[in-house]
Amino acid sequence: MPAPSSPAPSHHGQHHRRILLKALFSLVLLMLVAISWWDAVDHTAQRHVESATTQALVAYAAARGLNAGISVLQSSEVGLSLGAGVSTRPFEILDPFNDLVEQYADIMMLAIGSLVGQNLLLEISATPFFKATLSITALLLLASVWLHPRSARWCWKLFVLVCLPRFLVLITLLLNTLVSQAFLDEPTERNMAQVNILAEEVQTSAAAPSADHLTAKERERLEDEITQLTTQRREVRDDLVEVNQRLTVARNLVTQSRARIAMIKADMSLSDLLNPFHTEPRLEELEARLARQSEDLETATEEHQAQLAELARLDKQRESVRRHLAGEDQGFIDRLGDKLSTLSSTIDTEAIQARIESGTSAVLHLMALFVFQTLIFPLGILWLTIKLFRVLFAVRPIPLLPQDQPPERLSIS
Image (cartoon, rainbow, N blue to C red; front, top):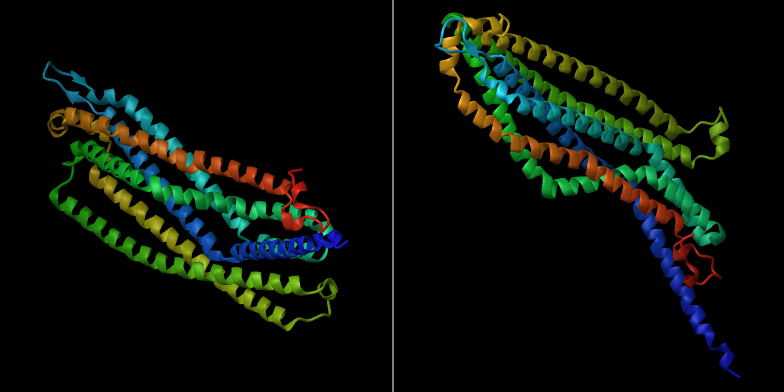
């Protein structure tokens, strides 16, 4: 007769196993909530996006400079000793490469737009609203797992839905950061260096025929002015770095205060929130501190805009002096017709053509690298992450099963 009582130890063991699974599940939930509030993760992804954006802007500037230099060379005429008025344009052969450079610049614009959009989505997903919502749904899920398993299924689906906007962009950018650092950064920097050198060489060659339109005294004065403007620009840039640091600190303080206010309001009851006569000393203190921090942030933002405007003014003035020094403001094409012999002696057409053709490989590699890094790979990771969230939304983990439902009935609904 003692045989019927034999399943008791097995049932007791399943109960302990379920408790252990619930504890592990709860630990994972708490870790996800902690990661959601950990700003270092968001800052890591944001630094990568900002670095990639700067890299794309430099590549775009080099492409535009290369395009401008080739266009100037294509318009240059070299005189031939075959009679009056006989000339040729040897750099028209570079027209296909110039078209390639224009397409490369368009791709850089697309990459910049993609990176700016990724940064915007990351900033939105890292706001205290999504963090607080994730924390609340995690608490609801924990309560249902331990107290009311029958409702755990719907709490789990709600939690997955909230995790989607919070972690989707973050996971995509972090994986993109790992792949870029491991495989893409080194070839991207190498090819960018080749394109930058090529752009400088082309621009130097294009400006060479107009180098003798100024006297030595005028040239020295303009060069001194460029040096002074460069020094002023360096000082403004240093000030801008300091302002950027203060602006970052001010933004972080405002974000932290808003998060603390949100947490205090989340702890308050609904009646306290709706009661206009209810006072919360901690909340009032934080709101007053947030007002002061917001004023500091506004001041730092105004200083930042002023520094940027001053930097733009200096750049514009320096570019104007540089153009005057190069003679670009005095009818460059007209002077070429007056100095055909100087042009033919200062420009080695064969050397320039060979150098530009050798840079085609670097331009093509950069196009492929930026398209993969900013479009193809992020979209692929985004698609895989969405598929993962769909699977998680359909799956019911074992700790969420009711007490009387055996694990073997677990399936994707």
